[in-house]
Image 1 (spheres, rainbow, N blue to C red):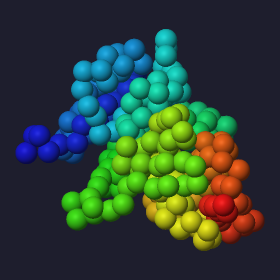
Image 2: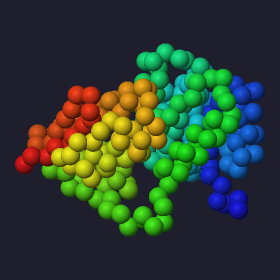
Image 3: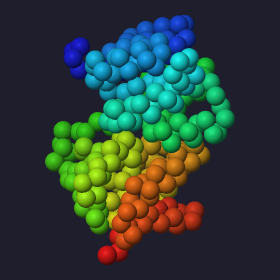
Image 4: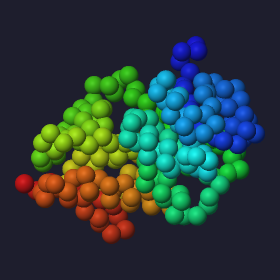
Length: 233
């Protein structure tokens, strides 16, 4: 049973909060490795493979945003969520821009954290009966491998985050069709709310930048309705 436990990297500098969350998550069946600052987290990432990282934003030496940039660069297949005491919209959106799949505001409700983690892991997991799904696509002059989270133009490779890859795959599978905001948010984020819609806008901007080298590819915004990934050779 132990080898089937999902491995969580918890990065939290507050001793009381870190101890409480670590113990609670382990009690709920997760294998938890607690890092007390960003540099410690990097050491643990080099030593072990994790299913999800939970990052505090406000930490000394290396804050959660800086650590997230490091994860995006060196561990692009690792999803992460933020714990933050900062309630400003700009901070929440920055977290989503960096690739966070979710966020929770402090003080943390332990039960809500467990539910969020379980929902995220269930969405990210590839069911056995779906492993034969198509994961390689041609988008104009690009090659896209959703399984490896790679977007390739000529010999230039872009490593996508989990969320970028999921969103691009969703749009590609509905090429030239309207993808309503609500459908995208429920499918990729698991819920349709204000902050996730703002996060979706950020990710669309990033995908547009990645795809800008082929002028025949456009992600169109249909006002108040959704997005269309168009390819017109």
